[in-house]
View 1 (cartoon, rainbow, N blue to C red):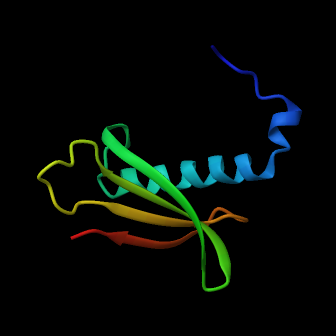
View 2 (view 1 turned 90 degrees about the horizontal axis):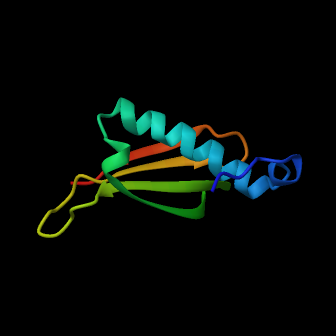
Length: 89
């Protein structure tokens, strides 16, 4: 079922912040060679050097008996700039 993005929904600052962060992180992940559609994605919120950031983790969906390969992208919650990119070993 499709949901129309009404002005009321778009006023949810947290949801809009997360959507912007996901769009920026997905582009960066794609640029790094990550197939976003085949990734298990998890998102956490934390503070990095005094800034609130979304930490978006891209890992393999088929992770059993597999080590490493994750990509972590930290995106500022307020201006959607990438603050840090890390690759798992």
